[in-house]
Structure formats: C-alpha cells, structure tokens
Length: 88
Image 1 (tube, rainbow, N blue to C red):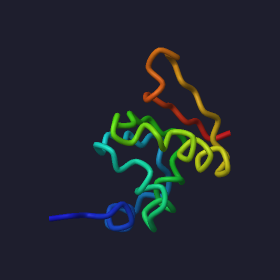
Image 2: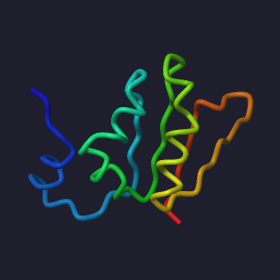
Image 3: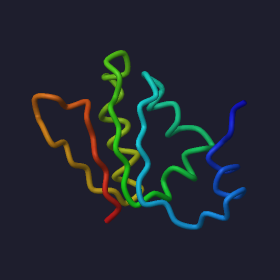
Image 4: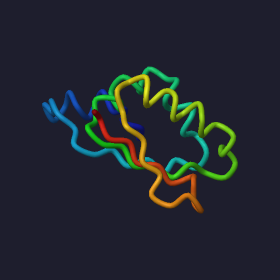
C-alpha cells in the first residue's frame, strides 16, 4: 500500500522534518516536480543519491533546491550524484 508524505505527516501529527533521505532509482527529478515536493521541501536537510539514469537532471534538481532556500553540498566531486541539501 502506498502512503504519501502528506498522509504520514497528517497521520502522525508531524510538524517538523529534520532529514529526508531519497534513493528512488531515477525518479528524483519527478518527485520534486510533483505535489509531494511541498512536503519534502519542509525538511531541514535532504540527502539523495541521484541514479545514473537521471544524472542529466542534477542541475535541475539543484536549481529546485536552491530556489527553495537550500544550500547544496556535494561531499565528493568524484561522485557528483550524491547530494546533501541543507535549509539555509
């Protein structure tokens, strides 16, 4: 059964999210352009691995995050598909 982020937040009365970790096998860009993005972007920190099949969307994802107040950290330039985003 699929449960959306909105349903989880409502069901458990969650008002703050410290960390969201995403590993969704190439659907990273799509999640940030869906209605669910409103809930994910409430997190103080986001950690994600961008799947190789979606690597061409890295700049779009970074743009979406920075436009929503996140500072982007790529801890290892040799592995640019691992991204940490911290709310400023």
